[in-house]
Image 1 (tube, each protein chain N blue to C red):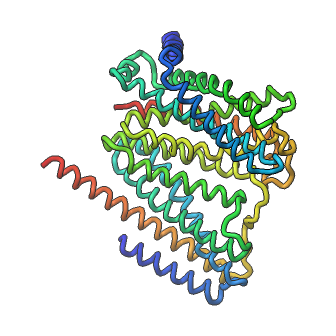
Image 2: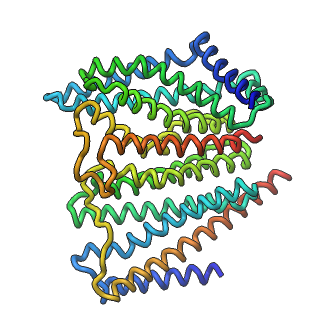
Length: 213
Length: 239
């Protein structure tokens, strides 16, 4: 099942890239990075939503699986957000001749990245009982998500928005390339979260077995 | 209800009296705050026209509050760890929310004592004037204080309960406080006369870019996070 998901995601991403570089190409050339940038931004936000749901579910049920799902979402979300910021910087350099500028959107996506990097640091640096760590991480997961709207609004106190709010695509092929990329990235993110959760679960079981011996 | 109020008063009074008698953290906070203000004052000197004074002054205020505040909040639950005070606190017939509110109140009071000493110093040394708008100035400082304290109190409990190092507290609190810092700086810069009351072309939402919007944002931030921390505090205390 997971194998099909991964293969499907790969196929969709290749199709999106091929479309984006041939009949769906946007001029000037640097704008083609949007086919990676936009799907990653949407999927990063989606992973953080799943992280929030998993954190609430953990506090409600105390099942360790939810904690592991939250951990996996944070890892995948940070990866996607890093790609988002990286491609954004490349685009910004080519389009506006600057790697980074404090415009509302760039500031808020940098803040989001920081929030979930701290979540990961919190996970690895809390010693002691795993249940306690899971509870504290769940609390931080909820607080961090409450920060997301705050981040978006606070960034409006910074002048000069260079980031275009939304792009309109000229042809159906361009929209198709973007949608394929969106779907492919979403599938990839889902499969990665699944894989990581499974791996974390196995590791936890192994640790428990080793402790019992 | 009556028990709750008595317990609340007892915890607040205990924390403040202990601090005033033992002077465990206030002197350290003052010295740290003074050092931050002094270093940033020296840095501001390198700008020839004095244009940097309001900016550096506002930055010095928030940086001093943030770091001295975290120094204090870290102690707030560290003292409870000694001699099993935490168990006593948990055994008291109080719900977790009341303990949180009492601790928060004590932390806000102590940070206010610190602010009362550091703010005049910053205004004098950076040569800033707020044009008689004392009420608004105090409102901005109190809102900032509440935001720093509400998150700091929650996470200092988390850090203490899990016996990890205090350095963790600073990144966890700073990262969540990050979005409050832009409006907080904005509000102070307006009061110091470095920015006009309303700045056109700020962002894309209609309500931002004015002093009132910054104040409203800080009120919303404080409300959201103090309620959330109050609700979530019980989860952290569970053994």
